Image (tube, rainbow, N blue to C red; front, side):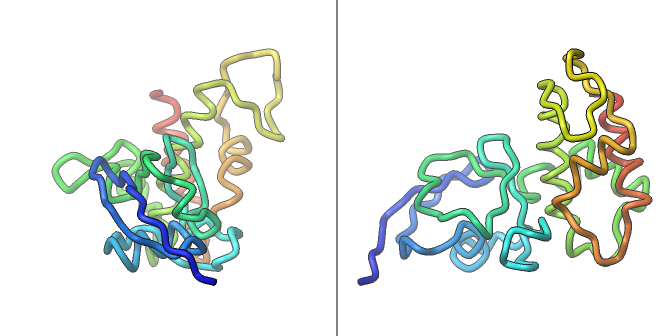
Length: 172
């Protein structure tokens, strides 16, 4: 038996009332129902990160998240980070460092980087964090690579992605 639910999703500051099948992913609602095409369907298994968005400021793979579980959560996609007149600092750094090639993974990379920088600023350690007793995380290249390891780039733009994130992380 298919069940529909009436939910409100808050996406990039706007409320959207939608009726969805309870099995529908957040990614499918964003792309197919709301026309928000920044998050991409890459692997559809939570392994590539192309669908990464921010849910209440924390990064999440929208292909694994059920839309009905996100009633009233604040969802931020690449479209909500900045615009042509006022880029988010990470967007500006990606442009300055030429940190993209085909651009397919870029929205997920950017949303993940925003969430990752917040995690580091809040003192959340990663597997490679050297000093766990220090509340200030040092964002060296190894730390950034580990924290961004859930976001894959088939073009291999990592050599430019890491310095872009490092630049913004240094100014946090």
